[in-house]
Length: 297
Ligand SMILES: [Zn+2]
Image (cartoon, rainbow, N blue to C red; front, side, top):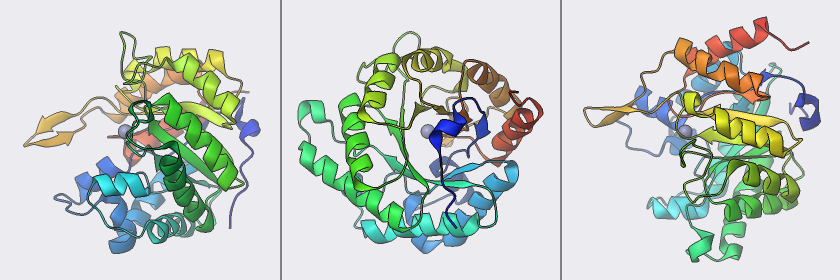
């Protein structure tokens, strides 16, 4: 059963979200020839078992394994998937795996990968692709949508508007800040505070950052976002940067190091905290145990 999400209730709370999806599934199923998101149809047990591990680790927000399942991103990867069927299944699998747990299922959506600023796609094509994915995730039963790892502010603002229009669900807008001397800028140069203000104005119910240069680099961006919005903050950084081992990206930062990097982000006002690339159930377990022991009163 769906669990209604009231974003405002988290403004003064700290709650834990899940960790990464693609990186963890690739690690577990190496060599993975399928898209990690394609596993929703072809190896659903791998997806549901990671979902359950995140819930057991203490996550109360679970994202669906649907990150790049929009028509334009799939085209770019040469995949000919049924967008609607895959997204519905991603949502249904998560919903089923968390049943009987007090957990919010959040439909994950990423950038289309087309840069609007240089007209790699028309606004209307991007809007259509994001609308299609959001509707399918809503049909599958998600409680909210997270727009994550966006790197162009114009696309993120457009995404908030069209998704809010397409589904009657809270929308979380999260961008990646991995550039600039303090890692407070997107790849394309937009500053974290400006992004947070514009996303708030566009109607985002939560605002934040994910992926990027790692949790230990995320504090300046989190401080800037906190100062620019009154919405709850969603913060899911990578555990660090990957090392290449035999041509594979490997994340070596320990759960202890990850927690040490996350604590200042919580002190700076992060409300929903989790991980992105390289963060697995052990990182989330360590983080959730600390949050449970240090609840804000
Ligand atoms: Zn990531």
